[in-house]
Length: 230
Image (cartoon, rainbow, N blue to C red; front, side):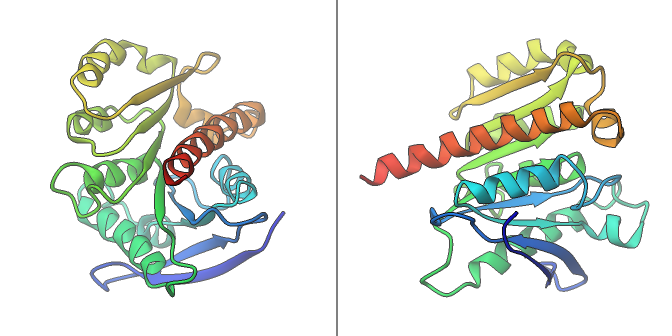
């Protein structure tokens, strides 16, 4: 386990302070950073997010994992106030952008669970504040709403989902064929609902599987960027 700093940063609109864990790289830094956002029912301390963060740090990535204000304040307006989720995400990005020139990340990746993932899709879609600034996006969970944002994506995407989402894949594949960026779909075949997998104490193996798939993909994306710089 590497160095983890507990920090806080303001949402982009200044209306809330967000709690976050800042994972420092455990090996030579790659100049890449990962922003990880939890869903409504989980937190930054729970798997698979905590597993993803520590394993990504082992790749040399800087990782910032935060709880949205809905997790911290136990609000129920998360579904009706999407701007809150978006401002929380943008605040995390602004925090990393505030670093000095020597340590400011040059590549950014996003990992979002549930509502956190939807905010990331909105931010990185064409016309979004982070469009063209993100090098890869990982979506965890079975939120069908996420699929509607895929046509406008501006970076490679990995979707990790479960069996009950298979019925959506036909429509998704049509979207992917028309897209400019690759979208990879990983299905956990032994679970009917990935949201349940996140919540169950009996699903340690599945949570580790989610983390392993996520971090392997992040490593591949970051290696591509490094190769392009040679």
